[in-house]
Length: 426
Ligand SMILES: *Cc1c(COP(=O)(O)O)cnc(C)c1O
Image (cartoon, rainbow, N blue to C red; front, side, top):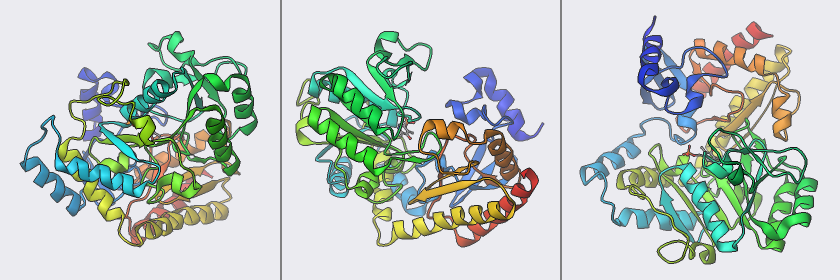
């Protein structure tokens, strides 16, 4: 057994499934998860000292690559002054001001420790603000693991959702309605029927948890118009896309002002930090100002805030996203070219530093489309790449990420490997 295998066996003794978050277990692709011991720039090294070019970036946060010197320095300096106070600090004021400056839709923001906390709190706030219980989400979108979000579609348009996890009460799931992504007609029909009961729509405006699927312009307009007309809250879950697809996130690209926005991943620069924020009148309902309770011992943690601030400052530098988009597109264009040459059915797209690739002819528009892609082929591709030192997300349902540390040579090296693997699997 190599080191990764030994560690995975040992891990399973006292950690359920050997992992602290399920997809890390390689369940859908099979094989042994890699245990990492070091990251630098675009690279990670596993327990057997194998180096990989990393396109996961800790599932999105590491937009500057691993251990960026400025971020590292900010973290070390903050830690030296105290790991946590459970009391306000100047740095969290600076981060809140910066977030509000970068995203015009956010007038007030609260810092939390995970994306799950951000979405869960935003939903409670939307319910408290509207005095309504019903929540609309879309098939294939992931918003963390709070009870009311672990829900799958029931049968028929107006059947309320069913739990997608054991342990979620049916009564909780019943208040969540699940519609197909990008289906304007279904959304309009639902609002026509029970719009007055709907507290909020929560959406990944570019979905990154069913591979990558973009909301159409019509879908975005319909969500904004219907929530406005019916007095519901529009929540953009930008935990993944926030500061990843552009400096003003997806909402900037869409020219949309959501009522509430959830942030995570990049905003914490690799540390446990997330946020939710939006309209003043909604945020004013939050404790201690208002009746909606929300709190956290480590919220606004000074070390995490330092990592977030350092990261946001660096990505705000002139031309950052332009360069990152070009680099990501080089990877996608290269893959398409190789797929053509090897007669592989394949498509791909990217926005900013986020990309999707699919073993299907067309770019998917919904969860059903993603389900129809060739997932067996994905698994062969994944393992082929992994064996040759390219680390992709271990599931056909995840988006990929390029960081500012990925050089031209890294992209060229990745494409060279991809050509070999495409030939192997075609
Ligand atoms: C990752 C993610 C979450 C959950 O964030 P955690 O920090 O893992 O709790 C929520 N929404 C979206 C869109 C995400 O990508």
